[in-house]
Image (cartoon, rainbow, N blue to C red):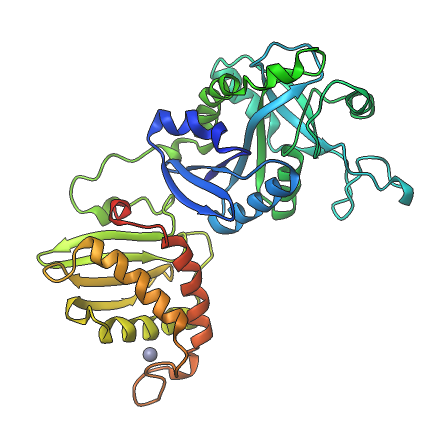
Length: 385
Ligand SMILES: [Zn+2]
């Protein structure tokens, strides 16, 4: 079970990161992804519908979350106090208009609907009540403009009767609908479209976010359920205590046996059905084993081979020759060398291999390329499972 907390700006996540020692997982295409705690990630996807949509789809493809929970500040069409928490029942997109084609205003073609309901809304409300969080159920109008009091705001209000407006939630709702991922949203009122001081109010959003984040994390934890409770710290053999339900792709130290260190190259998130095919496993095995065993670090290589669960590879090294930091750099450089390699697949013959017909250099390069992007910012401080 994995939950992704979707924010627009890094500044909105700050209070969440500060309160629980989160670690940054990646910085990609202008979005930042953090692990907040086991089973709960947060990302800053950018402002506006396009940024919100591309980051949500990327996050879904990469991390395969069960839920995306959008949290953020919003302007209010009602005279609500700043910081009021609104649990969102549905979104509309006020800037979608194909009415010349005969559609109603706000009708989103392709998915053919105006309102995007959030998932399990009764459950979200029950969780908030159990947490004693005062909230208001409401609807949100999303669009690519910063709403200020005026004729546009009046038109949106009279056309859609929303509680709030912002610039991302409706886009994320649409992405989640198309990808079959559950979606919830919690908003905090940062400014009022009924107030003459609207723009001044908005720039106090930090306090509105801090207050909202104190609610978002317990809600995410409740959605995770008992299975999402963090495990006790590792005491003996690390690999026995690794929670494979929350494990993310990466490079990890699994165990040490004397001078032999075992590293797990996790290419895929376990138990999601997204596995390396046998051909990919086999092809990466041939290519990386050949590079590692012929490279400058060959004296430190004990073994390289695939995991039976089809999610990655084991690399066993001699810790008297290679430090943890050496191994992290070695894995990166071996991946880069594999991507540059243009020769014949090593060991691709009936004499050298037990199933040489299913070897493919392009299949190996394809999955190595994805893995390299995961570990490109990795260092030895992130080797712990
Ligand atoms: Zn083989």
